[in-house]
Image 1: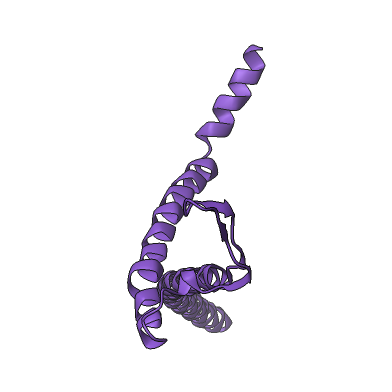
Image 2: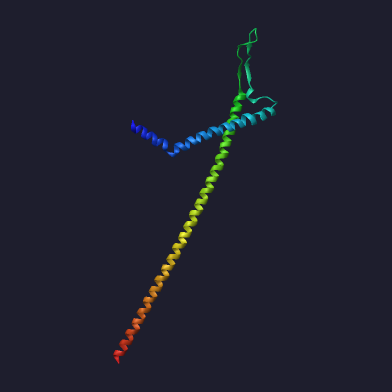
Length: 170
């Protein structure tokens, strides 16, 4: 049983689970905001445009309600309530559009950040390459100078040996 709780604790502590929980909470709140936008702002305008009717109340009555002698409903009305269906579809489309717009902004921001990181990495690599090239050129110049010094020493030694050989011949 102790392993179960240990595994559960590890699962909960993972960042992905916490990120997902935050996403669900924010998504729920975002859904409420967009639902309110549809129900409280857009649909009243649509209703006003179509003659002042509440879109959610649009329906096709298949069978009228039957009232008893006292005026109470004896048999309920049978109707296809397509207006509520249309409002739900519009609600979904507006929520989807809103989420798409938010995600698009986030993705563009991430792409720009990645582009800046890539550019900074390329600049750092170019700087490192330039420094390495400069170091190599410096090392090559030092090696060439050392080689020339050795050649000069050898030339001096050869000249000295020629002078000694010439003086021995005399």
